[in-house]
Amino acid sequence: MEDGRLKFQFVEGKVVGVYISADMGWCNERLFKQARRGLWRKSNSVEHGIRAILFGCFWLEAHCNELLGVLLSHALEGSRLENVLWKRIKRWRFSDKLEVLGAFADEVEASRLAVNGCNLKKVFELRDRIVHFKDEDQQITDSASTKEEIIRLFEESPDPPLICELKGKAVRHHASAIASCGRRMTRIYEQNMARAGLSESEAGALLRRNLSAVTSPTSQASSSEFESSRDTYLISAVSDQVSACEEHDTS
Image (cartoon, rainbow, N blue to C red; front, side, top):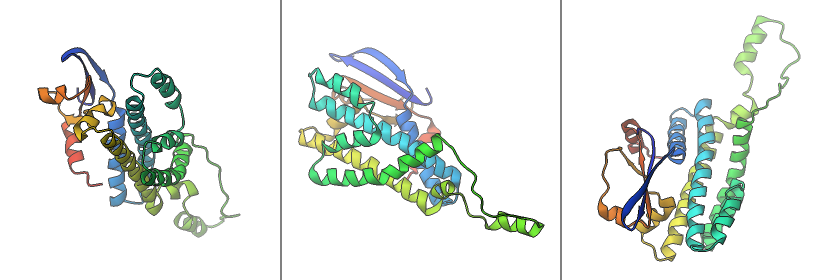
């Protein structure tokens, strides 16, 4: 396996199932970070802007689902309400899920997450405009009868509004809002688990049973690591090239 996720299910210390899945959350996060780095190197690249918006939003949605699913499972463990509630919530819009996630935070973090949510409203609208692209021609002049006039139009015509949102300062602001929200959601999860008395390693194990260790398929995890999980661990196997790229990610 070069990319993807191996899932080991344990019952009473024994492996009772091994599963594979496409780990799109990791892929989307990596692609977003790569695009964000590209924006700082070449801010007027509309290609980097499109990737940052699309994969950033995809990553936030997957990350929110993962965190919220674990928080609900931990809060409602053993209750029939857990599955019923999650089946409903996972179909909601990202903004509604983010509001539910905020209910697990203290007052300060909930307020900050709400600000993140407001900043992301325009980002998700932009994502939808890209995905469901529709555009209309906008007239900028009545005539262009000479060669010089045509050349001047090529050189001096402004970028269309959508392109302006995907370049320069505007898209860097959007990318920063995405990254900030991702960090905020993770912080809320960690603080909630800490209040519940879980250590950092136990909280990580609960994260959708997500030991998303960036490792090669041949890497070995220690028995103590496996024993610290309740029932399941996930190992994400990624290519050496991607691992090297992530090591240099300073965003």
